[in-house]
Image 1 (cartoon, one colour):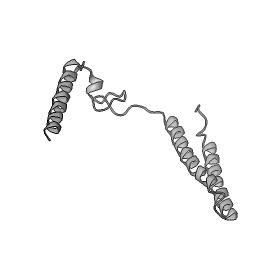
Image 2: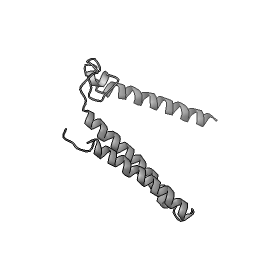
Image 3: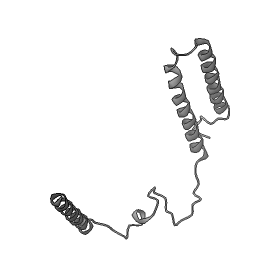
Image 4: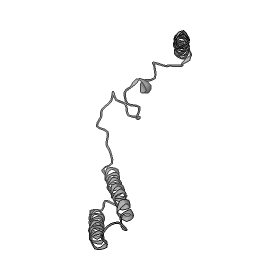
Length: 117
C-alpha cells in the first residue's frame, strides 16, 4: 500500500515539474493577433464580415458535396447486388442514376459547370 502511495506521489511531483517546465520554456507571444483570436482561419474577426465571395465557387462546392454524398450511396448499392432481388435492385439503381443524370443536366443547363461567367 505504501509503495503505491509513494509511486503516486512521485508521478504527481514529476508531472507538476514537467508542466512547470513547459510553461517556462514555451514561447508564447500575446502580441500575435491571429493566435489569440478564436478563429485561426485567416479572416480578421475585428473587420467587416461581409467580404465579397464568389457565388460560382460556392455552387461548385455544393455540386461537389452533392455528388460526393451520392457516390457514398452508390458504393453500398454495388456491394448489396448479390444479396437482393435483381429486378428490384435494378429499378432502384436506375431510378437513382436517372436522378443523378437529371441533376447534372440541370446544372449544365444553368451554366453552373462553366468556370467563366
